[in-house]
Image (cartoon, rainbow, N blue to C red):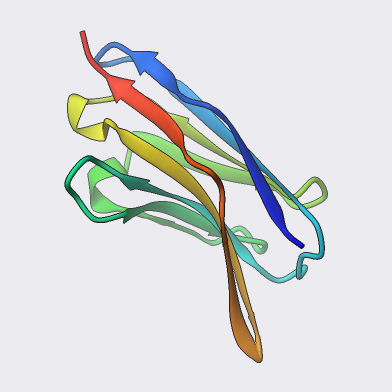
Length: 118
């Protein structure tokens, strides 16, 4: 069984920075993608950033240049460094781990609240 445990999040002023971390445990394929998604009240969950075990990254246009995703393959952890935060970044952020091996395996963390407000 795969588990994702998130840490970080909280309240930050506009223009501030915050870091989210996620640790995965269990039976995990060495070939996978880890990432972050977010869901604001009344909106659908959306991609923020993903990174493969090979280091290929993908960012939502809205966070490019402000957020940086990184990972430690040996520890199965992924980190999202968020800078120049805006009120519109306010959402619940979810860690995601996925891979394909005959079928798609897709796992989610419990979510962590990020609030950007003065």
